[in-house]
Length: 430
Ligand code: EPZ
Image (cartoon, rainbow, N blue to C red; front, side, top):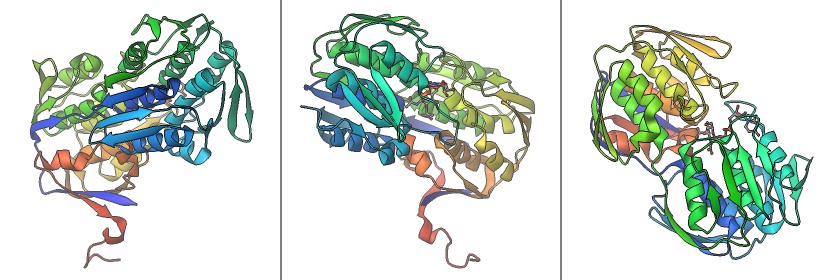
């Protein structure tokens, strides 16, 4: 297990520039889409995060050959060597469910371990399964595996009971090779869904309604090679924007799509931060001395992203007054609150609401990362918690943030990664 230790003699004021990496939640479906063709797919701006390595390991087991050079990947699945996504890989990364649709579409069968729940909630995949059954797949659950088969998927009309990002992505990929037309309703509108559709169109898919709630896909016989650049990670960008507001800093954030961050930008500006658009893909965030409390409710895109909830909660601990954050997407996504309380925050959880009473001075402590975005919130808190903050189990953080400590060091933060065998320096009491 590894830890990150942040030394904060006095609260940091982040100043300088930071460049955002490619989006984890865009590269994962793009990688799954490579199963749909025997052609070579070239992806650039790949984020070097743990989940990418996990997905590449899974794809190799399924028959992919690839070459990753710096942030560019060339990958080809000449033929599907196996249709089994084993439990230990799916358990490591729920997004493995994204191979289900492509395997069914290309190979006509799939055995994908049920992802199970995780730290932020129960995470069912019933909508993925219902949608694929509507396209004619015969699916049963046995011994913890989704066993699916379909001689040839047939186009159909399917409406999602609720918005699901990977559910929409799975169905679009399956429909791309189905016979006839598929109409998907109540689709997720996240930029990562639109980006996947754009890649599929480059591969030869026939898709209309990209970025809308109703997507029409006319199945084709086969898909071909393509080259594609992964979009910037709007959640990493949002994390650094909150860091600038939290530390009353002045940060220029490069490689960002401002259009993907509307809801967060609104909330940050109302809380007092100044946000200027420097260019098409750069923003400047200037934090203010006084941070105004905000009520925030997470919602599917373009609403306030659930993946920014934990980070925004840290900002609200430094606001002058009481804020209420309502988490509507996941049923257990407040684990970071307990850790923030250990740093001195005043937070009360009532069902799907977190009541944050600010401003509370934070003091450094040893804390535990529980999930990806919770880990990011603890790093943010460490920037303003006086003294030393050690965040344990940062494997969670490494899943979705590319070398976050290097980016923070460039912004003047004293932060180091510890292998847990020397987490206790000489002289510390054991
Ligand atoms: C994607 O997860 C993201 N992951 C998550 O990011 C993100 O938090 C989430 O969308 C919401 O924006 C990837 O894109 C790889 P959902 P996903 O299906 O697709 C319920 C991160 O930190 N639901 O949109 O798994 C579900 O329980 C991760 O990067 C069903 O009920 O989320 C939730 O309440 C965490 N049945 C809601 O829908 C289903 O079949 C939205 O989930 C599917 C989902």
